[in-house]
Length: 136
Image (cartoon, rainbow, N blue to C red):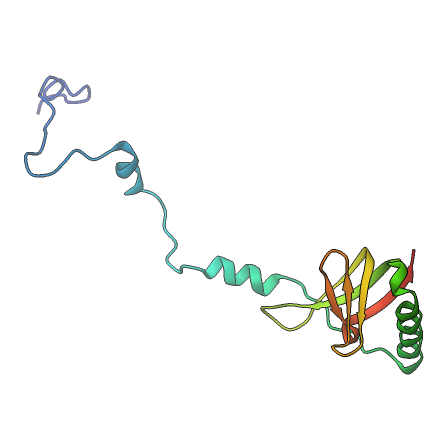
């Protein structure tokens, strides 16, 4: 048997070019050997399941009364566009629970009919989702 460690028997042969198939780009050739996900979307599902959400806190009677008084005060001061710090619950769109968010903004309107606070930034927060209000 001939020693073929250095490929002397084939090194000078011409490169084969197919007459039936077009030349494949380097990118397409590399794609043949790239890894694939056998379970498409599985990693996203794992990440979603691991994502933390908080449960909404039910306010006791005293806390609810305190918030009602603050809302009445804001209703009287709404024309002055007071700046407030608002902590509210935003429900999660994909799973149970949500998150508490604190924002500072100027109050635009207290919509008693729809039970919402409307802010200058366009944010609308339902009365039932409000956890705390502080005047700034």
